[in-house]
Length: 93
Image (cartoon, rainbow, N blue to C red):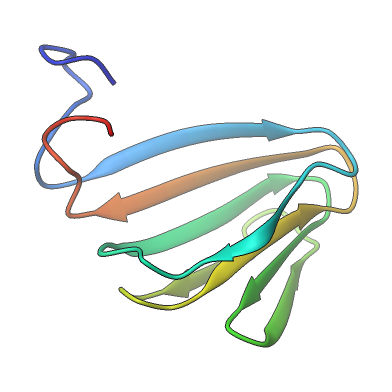
């Protein structure tokens, strides 16, 4: 988010994600410094944390992980998710 955007906060970041079936982050990201919760709104969404898979299938299903946990994801169906992270960086990379 651009500097000055009301949604930008050093405390928390909230993101609405729309992912088409087959979209993925295939390479695990493990350098994360934030705690993350991803909440399924609709669809079917697979989260891989380190080497364990979690499949979110019902609205309200969620996965949570802390700093340094390797994670990747795959939209098994068209999916909508809400991601909440904290703390949020002051500026986007």
